[in-house]
Length: 237
View 1 (tube, one colour):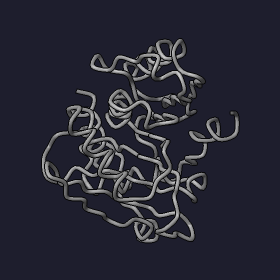
View 2: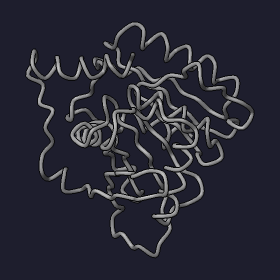
View 3: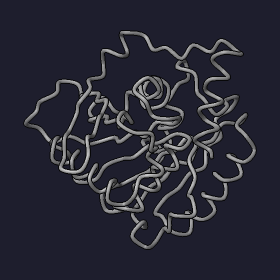
View 4: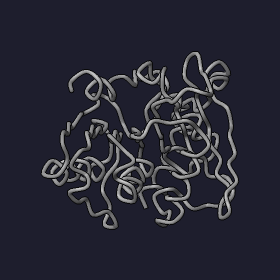
């Protein structure tokens, strides 16, 4: 339901308020489309490579899960607004795209999540622990992915994202560092659920912060300084 509301809000803002959902070519040129064929799935990714990329070098990974219906257009926008930060200049920034079906990542079954994670890990040279980030139903999906493979990740950053009923955090989450963001002007339900997620997880994970993004709603503009979401993770710990 939240994913559906995100799509409606996305379209509404575009039409009613004239919000520009396009992305400058200069930013789009930072991304490359990578398609990985597995025995059970076709996985499409938008990838921003590290500075001075060397295919023989092992890199840290940011796995970014966009909101809405996670088409290429929306993934491009979410990269520009949420996942594009100087903190990730030396990271592989990997953004999955929904192209072949209408199933959003928050609804992926365990086997499909495992298949995606394995395919990404086999295709790129990545360090053992990844950082996962997400927004809206992509934020919800981030917790789903961690629920499937908690040892794969070192941290979670959502803006916003919530734990759904299918996620059961356990002691296997105890090493994780979390930053949970929400827009000051977001819907009350989202804000309440993010705060409830914080209350639940602070008893389990290693470190956690709850961040209010002043003056922001559910959809961030490209002009937003994404470092406000990432400063607490990289500077405070």
